[in-house]
Image (cartoon, rainbow over all chains, first blue to last red; front, side):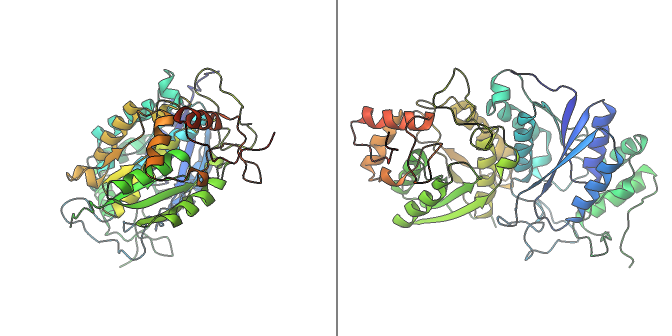
Amino acid sequence: MNVVDSKKALVLFSGGLDSTTTLVYALSKNFNVLALTINYKQRHCYEIEASKKIVDKHPNVDQIIFDIDLTKIGGSALTDANIDVPSSSPVGIPITYVPARNTIFLSIAASYAEKFSIRDIFIGVNAIDYSGYPDCRPEYINSYESMINLGTKAGSEGLPFKIHTPLINLSKSEIIKMGSELNVDYGDTVSCYSLNNLGEACGICDSCHFRKQGFIDAGISDPTNYKKK
Amino acid sequence: MNVVDSKKALVLFSGGLDSTTTLVYALSKNFNVLALTINYKQRHCYEIEASKKIVDKHPNVDQIIFDIDLTKIGGSALTDANIDVPSSSPVGIPITYVPARNTIFLSIAASYAEKFSIRDIFIGVNAIDYSGYPDCRPEYINSYESMINLGTKAGSEGLPFKIHTPLINLSKSEIIKMGSELNVDYGDTVSCYSLNNLGEACGICDSCHFRKQGFIDAGISDPTNYKKK
């Protein structure tokens, strides 16, 4: 009955820099990977296409794309077309914060993981070079892990989930160095919150800011396709 | 900035016996109610129609219907057409358990609540006359509340969510008595996991079993439209 697939991990995979590094990290730990990509009708839906391209390059990775329309909820510059993506962050949690987003994503992940008898769930959250989103912090992840093991058959029957966050304490440059050692091609990954129709990164949003600085700090050449000024 | 709407509550509202009692309970506590109905493509989608009818009967209730296709995940008799709804429960968590369902629902609820500055969230879970679902137990709800307050702007800025579970320690007959005193018309509510095309309840699934016995124990006439034998 309760056979767990300990060779398989579920990775929340957006096609961005952090989740691609996380996916390749999980592969390096000898997991086969189920990459779960959530199409939440975000502004930067180029990510979905990027994610497919990255999956195609890696053996031992299957991908599921799950649709949930968070623009119906809105409340964020990423999910409400009436709210502009800011070019820099004020103090506090910025307007790009999507209410309860990682909780929704991890819950869909847990549901799939339980269905497929997977217990290892990876998420590329990071609490160093980040925008201050509350759902990226270690105390949140620890609390989520306790909660999901109380709220699922898996956990309550003694075969609990483990939420892996290999990037959580790394700086952006450390993430880029780790991924580069694992042969991640960062030219395939998309981070920008407001890509243009040509797929060019704006270079000024929060997400571009951390990415740019990360490559500079890592001393690694930045393959990102930035918009020409 | 951080103005909370303390007169409004969000109620997870399926149109079933428990959530209808919860909705009317919240109204009796002088909340205006945002009823969040999740259309997860469940077998018993009659519930959605029932929920609209009930909302129409109550002033001070707005309804949002949010779509998420959990049949894509499956893994339950309620979300996979290839798994039959059993007529009685074996020992343990039954096959009608939907992986991580309440966690997904509460997370969508928290996202909407945060968007609308609501902090009071009601869910009609019950851990007495129930099917043993892990995500209906008090320890799960307590853990969820801690987690969501760590994982949202609302919680991390000191204006936390409260998850209300007014039915959690009531027997089914006590729920029915409470609702009847609040003038709930249980003839409008739908509980059966396998309604037929005429909208008749099977009378034998777990959900019908608890409902039937609840009316008997409460000594209240059962208005449910059961299938003729």
